[in-house]
Length: 105
Image (cartoon, rainbow, N blue to C red; front, top):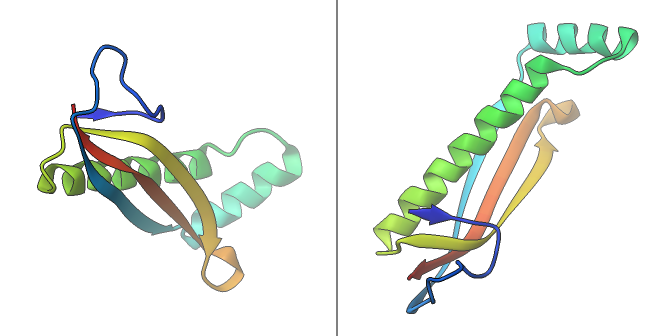
């Protein structure tokens, strides 16, 4: 399965457009991660804890996007867009939405 943010795949013309496909994932950061991230905010530097949470959420959304596209009979998803939002009380959770166009090349 080819997954790309571009609208075309070089050397592989789109034969069939199967429709829009999307996947969402919501992941929470627990209180210990919040405490350590808060300390990192005070002393400066990158928050590896939150970076790992974001990466995990992104990978989960992309896996689900691929599975949903395969169920539609696609062999590629083009024009993928990733959106990141905080949700929940006080922004305690991270939502990642992956959207693209399922196609057959």
